[in-house]
Image (cartoon, rainbow, N blue to C red; front, side, top):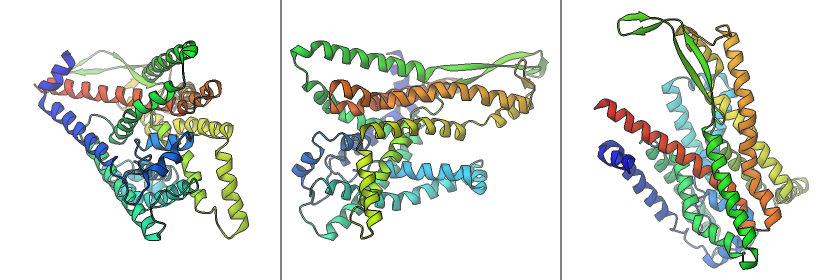
Length: 420
């Protein structure tokens, strides 16, 4: 209650939170505006009991089931961000641009522009993907398909704009908050589907499921907050106008530096091949048609899907950490400030040591993150509940985003108190 009162008393923080709530309300309103010409009953039949489409639906914020104008969510924008982050590791010019504020702004603009064609491609692929399960348009006219693509592309750009407005308030990452809002909106339906299959004779199974959920949440919180403090000794310290003796500090290295980002990246990539394959399912070239069919079939295999999902989360955890943490720069900053890690020489040896520690921490963090991502697939084999396929990932995103937002709110409150 004290924290809530502090939030309400600080005008800037209060207005930021109210603004975010207003944006989320707009998002949920648009989530119920369907693309014109869609048969709602046909869509319900397509999504009934299909776990792959359930995964698509949860990450679009529950908008896919009604095929709303924001049916694709922010996935095209995430895909565009991944492309430019990868280019930053390959193209030296882009890497240099990422180090400067003006260059980052230009890359962000390119990311927004690239979202438009990606949204159009993914929208068309999504229509083809759902069309394989049955016709859900009231008309088969090509103009109806084109209108649907334009509507969904516009909806994605609208959500991207809302996400950036939310990020500007410094209460959390706007894109992650939108995904969180979609998951929470679909949570009541998810719980009702999960619990509806149980009867009184399966009470023990239900209790075990609830206990496992609580343990998963606690484990995610512990692993998300776990960090190793690297001691740093500064030989001299300036206190006011006087030069005092040595001072000790530390560098906090988190076990999971990427947070929920590797999961979001992995989801956008693992869904992409299936959408692309839809373009070539009726191709005239035989080998291309067979390749598209094989791609669709292999991604329906639970073992292959789980293995690819696990591997992508693991690799993206390393990739994103390499993007946000640079041991060479940290070692250089420590040396410039007259500091050193006890027992480690400044410069290259410090950078090598930090890289070695981060890799050891990251192996544990990335493995845990990957296991949580595929845990629902494992649980499903024992329970037979298809709706559990989205449980672990949803919990992971909810916990990570809430913790990050709470920390940023506390930071804003502390900063305002210092200003006063």
